[in-house]
Image 1 (cartoon, one colour):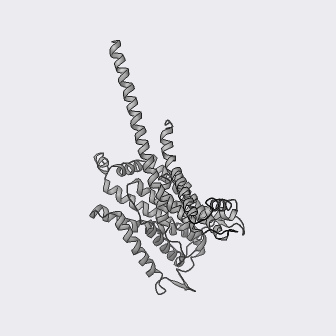
Image 2 (cartoon, helix red, strand yellow):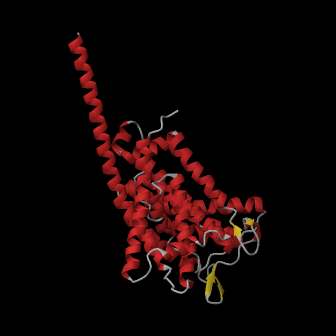
Image 3 (spheres, helix red, strand yellow):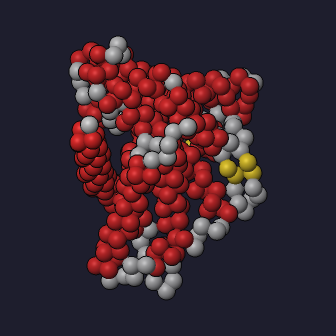
Amino acid sequence: MKKFDKERALVAVAGPVIAIVLAIVLTSVVLLASGKNPIEPYVLMLQQLPYSDIQVLIINQASLYYIAAIAVALGFRMNLFNIGVDGQYRLAAVMTAVVGAHVALPGVLQIPLLLIVAMATGAFWAGIAGVLKVTRGVSEVVATIMLNSIATAVIGYVTLTDVWGVQIGDNVTTGVMKKSGWFPGINLGSDVGEIYGLVFLAVVLGIGYWVVLNRTRFGFDLRATGASETAAAASGVDAKRMVLVSMLISGAIAGLAGLPLLLGDTHTYSLSFPAGLGFTAIGIALLGRNNPGGIALAALLWAFLDKASPALDYATPVAYDKEIATIMQGLIVFAVVISYEAVRQWGLRRQQKRVGAELAAAAAQNTKKEVAA
């Protein structure tokens, strides 16, 4: 059993807590500057939490955020910035929707097929950036940003009415998927809603992420390469191979991010399918410190801010803009960078003092032995 390191745990928790507190303080300053109550918006949002329908919305939204954030975090642990999760997830969702609308198999085969299509599409799109990095030294940041734009163009082509698009009113969709590909959820009643069945996929991915990183040789090689490619190469790790494999796995997980919504609710890809999920996931992964438990809490916080904030528009006697929640989300990301660096510096100073004290104690002990001798 590892001895519990209280100082390390404090450093791990301090960063996110400081970031959230700082974001609340800064958001309150914005509210004060606009002449509004700096406390009431938080109270109004917290008042929505006991409602079952809001809880269901939060859980469903958090599942999408969590899967996308795990994909981002995997890249971070490898010291890779996979900023292309948004394009990977959207392209995977549209290709899955197309296959689901045109292929009809029994449910036991249809759903695994759709999962494979989503993972393969996401892995392929991320793999392009991985290949460019290991063969040509192209930054994954630049490559994935460009691939996001290309993914948008590909989606636009795929949804053309003379390709696979289906015009429904003012909306363009990929057509309704075969019912054998609909993933059943947990129905809590017409007044409450339904929890996506693939919420459990997010749980499985979180557990798998932790096990692979902390209990397998691959996870050790991945973390070692992320810490220092030179040191990893010296110990026999193929750094380029790890970069490519990590991008493929990150893309495959990103491809799954839209499936809880696609298979559990919309059953089609359309213009109203959410975009920007991958960029939100970056902030969630940062806030969660790339830890599966921390990411889960961050995803729930983000989903809460998303789903509880509409109540601000209908508050009486004074209405608040729901964009307050968006401001707070942005400030959290901003505060994360500052707080993590401050906590890191504090941790380093503490560590240096502790090592210095231990060395001084050892030197004093040696001096006593020499005198006694």
